[in-house]
Amino acid sequence: MPSAPVRLGLVHTSATLVPVFEQLCRDHLSGVHVFNIVDDSLIKDVIAHGRLRPATARRVVHHVAAAEAAGADTIMVTCSSIGRAVETAATLVDVPVIRVDRPMAERAVAAGRRIGVIATLPTTLDPTADLIARCGAEAGREIVVSARLCEGAFEALMAGDSATHDARVSAALEDLASEVDVIALAQASMARVVSTLPVSSSRPPILASPPLAVDWLRHHLVRHD
Image (cartoon, rainbow, N blue to C red; front, side):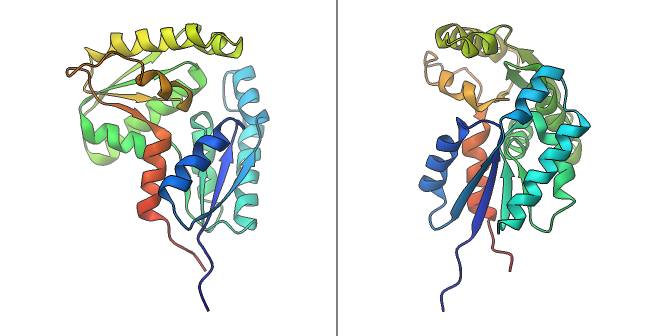
């Protein structure tokens, strides 16, 4: 009798990320059964209060536990702003739980000493920069993290002005490029801007979390019976 397929549970704070990860999983995780849990009230609460509150963190833990109860062999949470709650949730379930930005952070640490991080939200910038700093310490590497907030970009995107959002992200990328060895994008929504930048052999690598996270899963997904 053939074994049941590996089940991957994805927990999102925005419905817009569901098709992004479904496409990546179709392309790179053949045979893996993927299901989604979406609760955009989590990120809305973080933005409204400027921090991850304990009550919101408890709900993150609840969603991770629900994904385990639904049969997930591995769980990935696709929002960087709630990363600390994800780490707590990982200690309370019996299956692996992955922060979406962890593989990116580890890749950034391996790529260079001077690491740039850009975001359009401070609630995402700080957790990602903190994770990279901790990954550096764990790897025994002396790194310098330069965090850059794209002021006004998120507000422009929410107002439907994607051109202004993209222009501000692009300017931040170009400005930071001369100062660092690698750049990590704290939000998946910024990844599309990279393809619009002029070709440059001197620009450092620019890392985005979704493809790196799915590539990590491709090498590490295992079934837990």
